[in-house]
Length: 115
Image: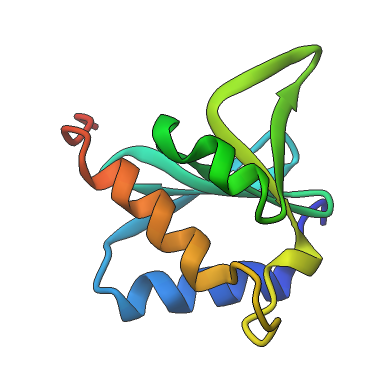
């Protein structure tokens, strides 16, 4: 697989703990988690794409995230977080729970997409 199966399971568990209904879709060799029809996070080689509010972008870049690049273009509204930044026991760092909370805050503010 092109994504970390253990990380995928952790994301599933954390979304379920929050009571979020979600779907998964295989996309671009990875796995996307859809909430209300919107891609919320996506797992791929070495990390996770997370949704980010524009006003939080600079702060999050200073906390271990990198700009998300697809091809030669930066994906606005998305950041890439490496697997080593997603540990739930990494002191002083954003952890998986924090990244999911931020991503969900962006997605849940959007109107649901129709299926």
